[in-house]
Image (tube, rainbow, N blue to C red; front, side):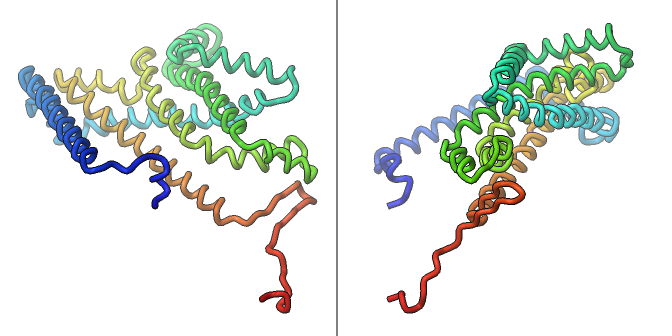
Length: 302
């Protein structure tokens, strides 16, 4: 009996036949929907070769517009991720503090920025930079986009970190206290390393959100990211908006697929590393406890 059989009953012949019918009906409906979309686009002259050919025949579409836009998207996302991840981890740990003068202000900050739409924070940051700083107008949208992404996503990451740590068994903390580890050592050496694997899927989902939300800065603030380049492409190559949107959507799909694939590989590597690691507990610089198999004398064996 397989391990999964205890979770649900194996489908019988009728259930298998019914599932096949459902799958066939779904595929037929999906094919009809796709045919309707393509037929409608053809009726609006959106499948004409001249609307799609620039993305294949003219390299300037890529070198002048799409690739620079992609680099700007990656720049804003990388800066936001590099700042939001450690900031979110600190806020999440701060919310778990036993000192109310730490946990309550941190909790208020997290709830405040988590409740505000990220687009509103981008617009507010852009106006604040324009009125109270000397940042040049050509780089101001980048600062505003990164600021909005960091404030919102650091708050969300803080909740992910807090939930990941709280999901661990309380015995982990008790064992760390039993060997004399301080609170900081317990968090750094015991709780966080174990919580990372549990938090990784949610963290990756939030990183994907960061990459996609950079498009808000292009749509509202004029930041020259990937989606913003559609306006320039359609202005220079005719009314091929559908084609440009399709190409940009595919680029986002590939980019986020690579990100999630890397995260899946990293998660698997972390899990394999934990299974292959020995049962060693470190209690700081001077304390190390290692559990070995009990030694049995030869004459005591049967």
